[in-house]
Length: 489
Figure 1 (cartoon, rainbow, N blue to C red):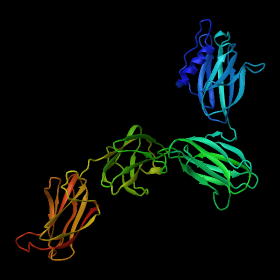
Figure 2 (figure 1 turned 180 degrees about the vertical axis):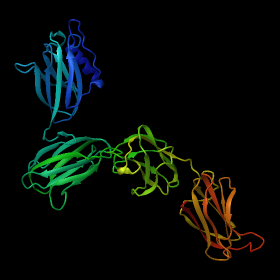
Figure 3 (figure 1 turned 180 degrees about the horizontal axis):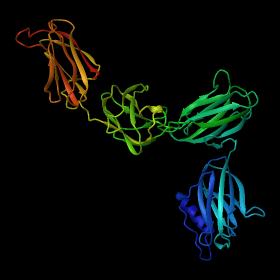
Figure 4 (figure 1 turned 90 degrees about the horizontal axis):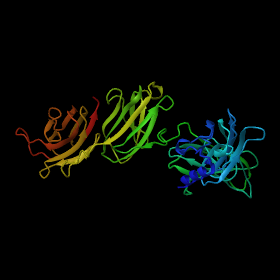
């Protein structure tokens, strides 16, 4: 509503009384930056142009407006987003142009109106150039900083704290420093979020200096933040405060600020020589079976490579070309425990690689593979070891695990006590026997299914029991240890 009212105000101010109506300006298509050159033309059909720029409190912007041809007599006006006039300037004495600095009094949107003298009633016409230059930001308390800004301030007994604000996006990675430039000042830095919670602070950057520095501050949530520049004890003096953005700042650009991805979601991005890896994070539960696909996009020659890391960024799975062509795919990976996991989407050979291009990353979860497992069945993961006991009251134990086609497993059942004659059977999801073993070796009553390649992806069952044939003792009993292990192909 405020924007609509403001546009109406402009029309009332500048509409022609003799039938030459001003052009309707869609300000969403007329956004301009603080630094750059804009060219346009004014005449009877278009007596003014309107642009907008987003400004911050304390910023100083220089406007330079000049006629380029014709007899145009240009006029410059700037309004804030409440409709208040912030600047109005006709041509400088003896010229057909305007040069004027404007200090933004508030953070918000500013509307820049370039018109001819008299607007709709004016008689001049011609082309113009509008050049805008951001000269910097005032060092006054409460000024809003942009990344790359430096300001000078003073801490004294009557002014023990100076604050500045800045706008940040989730995933930004920042370095904020406060360096003494005079006096006995012992700088102290504190950063608080929009709810006034402290997110970082520093007294001495290291033992050899009293200057304060906050390194690698990761912005967890976008919004307005406040930098509080103060002192330790009763020191006083001048300082230089600066705020810089890290090279790989931004969500997904570093392991410090991974881009969230959920099951069933797809993320698109691009890899190049400057940014050859992207970072993603997701929450998972133990026994989730996931698949991660990294597919090359429509441009580039990217040779995709995937790395799955645990919460401590230790690699637990990786793949180069399990997808079609040069696409990477981590297939049916079973999550070992609850927690946060990280995906690195990169290229073959990482920093030494040569391929670049667009890609799509998708994370999927398999429906619970144990949903149809009989109640009471113990589920195992690769590397698991369990204890059991076979006797007259418990002639067998059943275990379940999820396996992938071609995965090579070994299953051992080793007697611990008694006279148990162990027998192992491996069953598929339909509980049909696919392989079995009675005696690992001659005169050995332990069982071993060794280096068996699983024929299909799905749920498997291990039946641990005792020998029940006619040429031996069918009634042996005892405790055992069962181990399920993955083997190299």
